[in-house]
Image 1 (cartoon, rainbow, N blue to C red):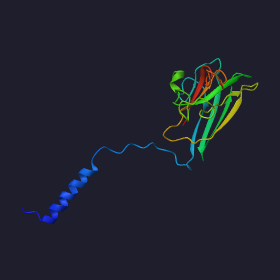
Image 2: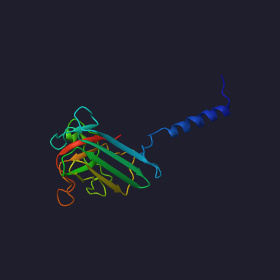
Image 3: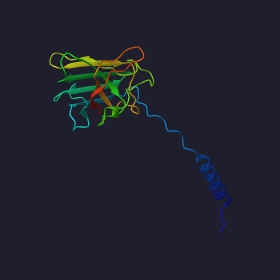
Image 4: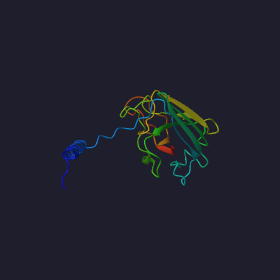
Length: 185
């Protein structure tokens, strides 16, 4: 069978073009949140040992019945975070931060503090929500950061710490042992 010359030219051009398109795939781009997109994360629960989303690691500092609720809203270049706690020890200061990973059976499972600017340890890059409880063990805190969360890099949990956050010096960002954890959704 004879192939017409015009068809042969068309087949050759298609093969050459297909080969030119082959090659290494384009690099995967990080998924960024659109500037006008809102990201909402939240968690609430009574700290226990059974619910993997609300875990108490220290029953002395997070007694039976202690609970918390956290809301994170990020849009228009800002992230606003609010924390409310009840049933903790009365008249006591605690530290609280967003962490990189979800809660786990061990306190360290939540990973390090979430940092918007990796390696920058301060209230401008991290979300610090230290609070002091009242005589009934209730407390609240809020934070506003001048950056928006990116869907590809969201915090995984809120961790309550045994001490308030150290704000300067060689121990900046530290807040003692992990007392309780809420997994963000």
